[in-house]
Image 1 (spheres, helix red, strand yellow):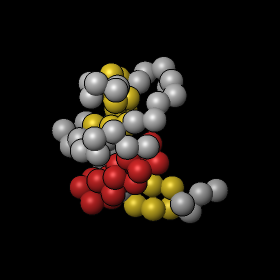
Image 2 (cartoon, rainbow, N blue to C red):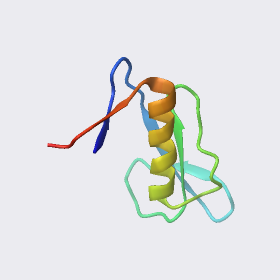
Image 3 (cartoon, one colour):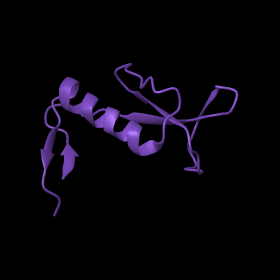
Image 4 (cartoon, rainbow, N blue to C red):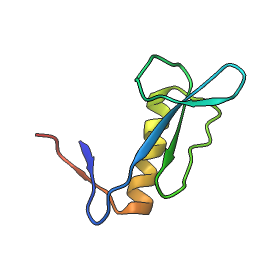
Length: 75
């Protein structure tokens, strides 16, 4: 299943959470064990630095509930 935009498209920024709690933008896709995400609407995940798969679940739930995304079967 794939989450697809229907009426609006949002941009998600991914951040790596450092050991001291600071966040850095992960533009290069380097390996990190602690993640946070921020939506272009201003919503932010508040996991405290979870594994990426857990944050993806939160991001998908946000897109579905707030931005009218729908689930579609992958081809």
